[in-house]
Structure formats: structure tokens, C-alpha cells
Length: 197
Image (cartoon, rainbow, N blue to C red; front, side):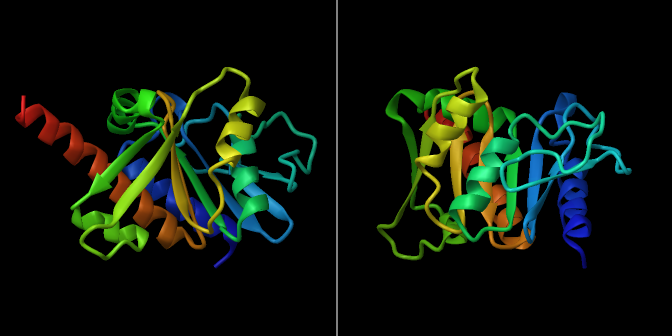
């Protein structure tokens, strides 16, 4: 299966869950020295020849075209240039935006005693999943610099305050697993806080 086919599967799985409101969110996959990223401003609930743009390792389009890579391509580039990850996902949900705002002043959110932190390789009773929360400057290059400070492993997750989550992994399966586990943890945390009021 080609890299383009793999990232299309990721897009369609996320689209089936309604996770691209208002053309938001974007994806990236490594294909040797080429990266495929979602096209800026297109309807991601539709798959066609305009769904992805091929860019180089700096995020620059490989062909002259009216199609532009997603604005957050620079985040995917940081992942691919700093790790051996092959798939990067950036998604905005109400749950992850609320968590980023609730814990944003702390600069992190910590999950513990939750079964789904095992998705991140955390199996011991006292293990904690610590997810950094970075600010959301309007300058996307500045955002990429803040993001890059937390990109050290071949898989991971970073929240951007009121601007969604980035997850990445070596395979599409790993990236999707981490995204889905993280979303579950966000939803659970919000609901338990509500119940305890």
C-alpha cells in the first residue's frame, strides 16, 4: 500500500467520525524524502485528487499549483525531521480544546490511573501520561518552534491551547491509536470533573 493510500485511510476514518469541522484539521505522512499533507481549505469529507499536496522536507510544494499545503504543515515537518515517525495528525475537537484551556496555565495535563494511558506504553500503577500544552501564537512558525521543543520520540502528543492536538507515530495504526486514546482521556476527564461538581 502506498503512503498516499495509507494517509487517505486515516483521513477517511477520521472523517467518518466528523472530525474535520469547517475544513479544520490536517494530516501528514512521510514517503521517503517526500511528504504528503492535506490541502489547505478543502473539504476533508471528500476524497479526490485535491485532497493532498506533495511537499519536500521543508514543507515546500514540489509542484507549482493552486493547491496549498495546510498551514500547520510546519508542525508535521518538525515531527518528520526530528523523529522516525511516519504519520502525523492534527485535529481540533471540543474535548481537546476544553482540556487545553482548563489546564493551559499549568502548561500540561496529567492523566493517571486510567487504562488508556497504556496506549502510550505506560503500564505501571503509578505511571503518568504528561501531555504538554503550548500556547497558540498567530505566527505559525513561532508555533512550530514551541511545538518542536516537545518532539523527541517517534510517537507522542502535544496540545495547542484552543487549537487542537498533534499526535504522531511510526505507523498510521499507532498514530490513530494514540489520537483515539487521547480523545477518550480528554472526554473522561471533562465528564468526571462535571460529575464531581
